[in-house]
Image (cartoon, rainbow, N blue to C red; front, side, top):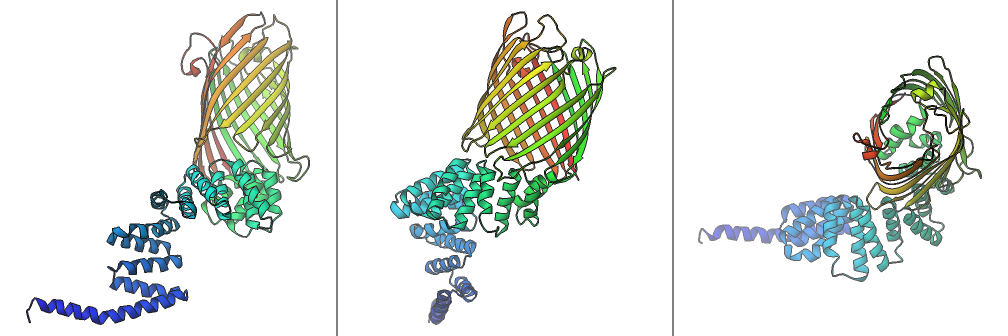
Length: 566
């Protein structure tokens, strides 16, 4: 026998001897898999793959069994190995690999595979692949892309309840709360006894700005059965203004979102608090305003808050530099229940006393804030205020005001707000002030656009008296703006900028035109569950108050605040 043939003959003999053993091992593994005895089947397939890893059919079979056993990561790895060895079998392997990649948390890989498979398909097959594509996009954070995939899939499979539910969820996370509610209401009418659907509908209504309806839906169902549902109910109580009822539901959070709600948001509203702040502003009239504020408070009863504050104010312009120490106290409490016909209301009373040199004004405030129904908010106030300008302080100017504001935020992209106030100064000057705003969310996450208008009409007063406060006979203003806000926990950012046009008529009948353009930036930073920093700055008027202007009024400001909780 040739020496070269000896190794080949030995290898052939070993393979022939092993073949019955391999066949017996595969039969045993298959029998265990058919009985769903994964504890026996999976180790047997692992041994077979280790011994015969070049057998593509074995790799596919082992991958399939691992998938049946919900060992998705292992299944996906085996499919990838089979595909690497037999790329010509891509059409057979990729469909299963796409699903196992999705279920093992590899959303980007799954999306690419589903996107490869969708073209050229039709009917139920296309609907299933679009469903997978939508799930992969949603898992990857592309809610809008998920909506597009699920919508096309639903058109092909209109009776698929799970698909319709996934479409509703994707609409919710993409910001289309109205669409989510609409989809889930349709399903709930079809399956009125389905608790999961009822719960999902209540949750969608909560995110759509209807916590009262959400609570009614949640409380009509049996108690929450897992931490995710407890977090849903807690969020609804919180958004309805009942933080003390939200807190116990998050006593043992099992995920990061629930822990954030409990420790960084809801918990703060139940603990004693303190704060400190600094404000600075300047305007074209060379008025410099500086104020330091320190305060704190506690919650003596559910829904109630006591706040005590001290403030140091300094003013400086060509007319003088008065300063004052101010102290204030306020009490706010809650009336009503989410199911009450009149809604929930928060009355408050406050008293501020100022100590200027030789002048000690006392300034009361009565305020009422309420949510009479979902999507509506009402604010009413009666107050006495100061005009913080040196000459107005020297003339001891005070102004009494009655104000009413209404905010309407229906389910959908639009929101509206309007307010009116009657102001009466101590010299008899009386004026009416009206404001209005309409805002719409835009497709880009966190972006909205709006228009706002402001009208002032003076109805009484002496035209020849100038006591150091702005007092036009008539003022009209219209502005368009863009607003953008995002949160990258623990940091959040808000930006606003707008362009405006204003027309003013003074007490002598002179008319002028101005451009009350503006910009605003606000940055919040949660240092810990017990501390939060906030910085805000902005400017308004000519050139957005970014620099000196030859004409027109401008103002710029800066505020810095620290809140702490114990």
